[in-house]
Length: 464
Ligand SMILES: [Zn+2]
Image (tube, rainbow, N blue to C red):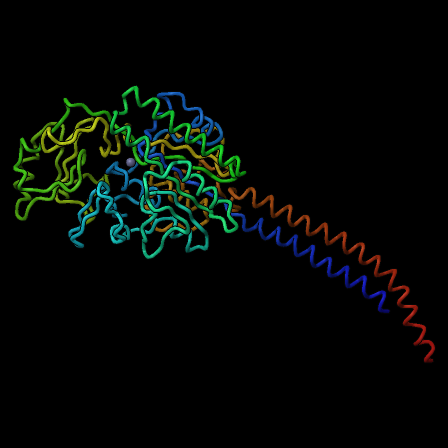
């Protein structure tokens, strides 16, 4: 009997081992997570791709979706818009209402220019997507994206780089590739680069010298694509290339000098041109407002409660009592001795010059497709859909952007094409293997049982 039992035990053991491997394959197919890399080139205006040759942007557009006009949020500055992209909220709701802020409740200031941006209390009116992603059990990695080196609600991204503008683009890309390909990979990466914003301020967007600056960004995108290809991530992860705002050309002919209209001792400027946040001294609100209200035809001055509803920029204690907003291309200064920029942003978010680039490429997205318009707030619910996490309450609309996906999601979750194929193949392998094994095992058992039956039967017969 024994010699017959050993082969069947070995066979069964082999069967369970192979079945285990196949089930693992099936499980990994089931758990295959769409991965997303969100890239921001600060101040990359939507139409920069038409100013000079940008083959890498166009390569991404041909292989993905290009949204022509993205309406970002007011004020069209860096920190408010970067936080909108990762929360889906208007500035009044996420609380990062400007690059320079004063919180009268905390009696504390927040300043991008002084890099005093690390007080978590300023960030905690919202919860950015990397926190929700990690609470779902996933891993996130951030290379310099605003807010990702701040411990918001006690949480940092799984991997992050402390902000340091001297760190080269290539190093930031290397970190993200490392995180995406590690043994415990991230499913969500964020990449931030300071240009072309800085040069846009310095040269002005209409300056021919912006050509090489835009070409350099295109080369950087090409570098990113080449590194993703080398890591076998291109075509596998979903890459969204966007920005926070555009840029408008200024002129020394379009300057509004506050000193001409109101005594500087009556107020304090919290955030600067072109949407100037004004905190009047105690009891001076009406005096400052009256002095500025009709001071200049290219400057609109609002008391906080008068700020247009369409800006969603009123209901927050960090929005100051008076807001003076310049018309596009105009600058508001104390007087002409202030530092003068050649380009600036922060204007009404309806102005096309304020709008950023948006290209999405990867397995989840349509190919060689264009979409006319979307809101920057819609990116958040889209990201949540891709990452399979439940969005927190937000001001965006997934329905408004789901048409950029390769297949409009239905009950089956059409974005999970790779998962479906994986599960199908995995299931097929398990079934085929089981069928083949059963066939061989049953035949082998039938033969051995015939011999065994004879061996067992004989002693029984002998007993009688
Ligand atoms: Zn910016």
